[in-house]
Image 1 (cartoon, rainbow, N blue to C red):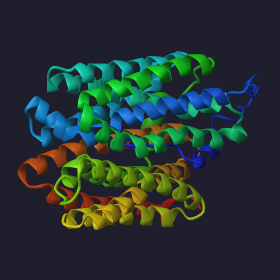
Image 2 (image 1 turned 90 degrees about the vertical axis):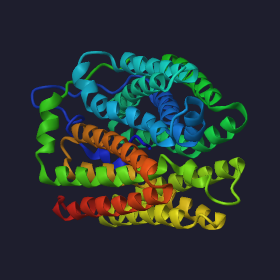
Image 3 (image 1 turned 90 degrees about the horizontal axis):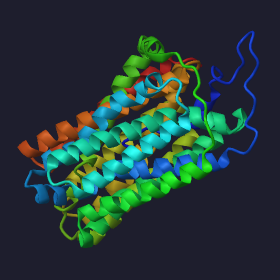
Image 4 (image 1 turned 180 degrees about the vertical axis):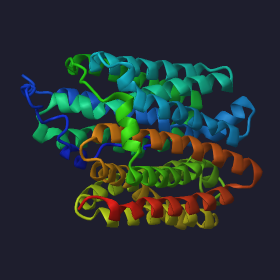
Length: 412
């Protein structure tokens, strides 16, 4: 993360879906505990986000296998994100009446097929197609996560349920890239995708067993999305968020390429380096959750500064492994707070249309990932990885400043 955006506890303050409408009765609470279903959703999110993050640790190997540049290989990230930008907000309107358990199972099957197809792909073009399929699965699942969780648990437990779901993102952030780097160092990059395919198959079995039926809820459809985008606060904030996330992913996509240029780092220590980034992201996610509700302005200002500091310090520390480790820790700490702070921000900007607004945040993340990976790859092929990182740091600061500037326009 995500290159995808988790839903924060603040999202649960929306009363639009939970409060009964005049003339109707409130929806009955679930008759049995829905927490096993929440756990199944968390495991599904873990496998999906792991699948999305893997290329960051495998690009040099994939590029060498297919005879392409690493910049071109990085476009598998672009493919995943670009289709996700469309699939996320459109999933509800496209399947308005389909039981959400069936919908999510279908998306998990798509993810399984994507990982298998990537593992056996005879050409780079097939990998791109497979990643397009994965993008649909990831964005579609995220777009349904809040609505499904709200059916599984009582309204006063929804925030806790989303925290459990977000463990899947945190776990993938910590484990995916370093494990991918480690396994690929002795078994090759294709074995990594076979392993995540097996994990996805287990997630499907768990989902079938633990997830109850989840009837579809009525939504405002595309009109609601358009109405939310008419808000100046939302529009400017989403633009700022897009620039920030693009700067991050324009650099992070090529983090292994940059790490291989640091003297003294072996494949094993690079795996540790990436794990440090993941742990930093986990800590950042927890800290942002503690700060964002009461001090949102501080969170919005501090997050891009930490991310940019980490990226730039990494670029300037190619001769010092110690400084590189410090850089990735700062980088992970900062970006770990982006999902929570951005979701808290959107819940303040659109407190009565949180689900639609959250879908737009997901779309913004996916667009930014696509643009960041694409522009980063082009810049890498024409300059060097240090220039890519410096440009990414500047973009993070500019985007973060624009997003933070909207804080004064939010309701108190």
